[in-house]
Amino acid sequence: MWRDLTAIGRDLLADDTVRVVVLRGEGESFSAGLDRAMFGAGTGDEPGLAALAGSDDAALDATIAGFQEAFTWWRDTRVVSIAAVQGHAVGAGFQLALGCDLRVLADDAQLAMKEPSLGLVPDLAGTKPLVDAVGYSRALEICATGRWVDAAEAIRIGLASVVVRREELDQAARDLAAALLAAPAEAVRATKSLLLGAAGRSHAEQQAAERTAQAGRLRDLAGGAG
Image (cartoon, rainbow, N blue to C red; front, top):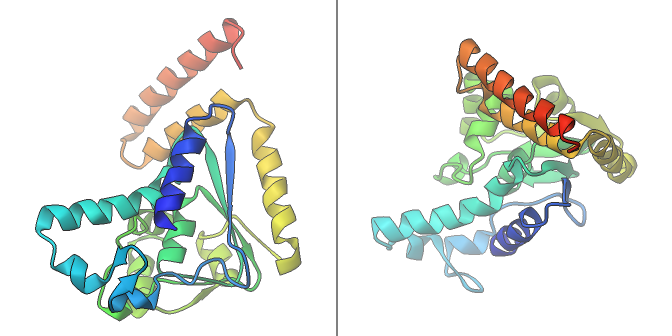
């Protein structure tokens, strides 16, 4: 599935007409996370964790980096991504939802970062967006305890953009996508780029980035671009 998600991302990002991507899990839960078979011999073409541990440093790093690609392309400035989350989003599933720009949760959603409870760390690019959303202390508490975060808490602490009834989840995601599509594509992309970089810039640097972005937009508009 990770490899398929990576391939899907490459195809979507190569298509300039794609502006919004909605990620939806089929069934009762968004994603139950890591297949427990990985603690043994593995599953299908995927080696188990013991086999991965036996790799040299470079090979192990490259393998994990390959996994991470499936979880990181959602933040590319060419698209705005929405995770529509119902039921459980556990570990890798939680990190996949965190990889998206926006999260719409059903009222039965349950999120948990279980990796530390299994002796591992969250390694699928989920730690930064979690800290960005809820702050270091709360992120540490959520990860280290492995506890469940329900939909009500998720909206309160900034993990969710909106919470709706389970039967309204698909429509809420579609409505949000439509609202995002209402603004000119390049303006949304430029704004996303500005916001993504804001945490790493000083106020003065962010102001300079805003000026540069706005100059580009003004010139594009004067030239007739969208």
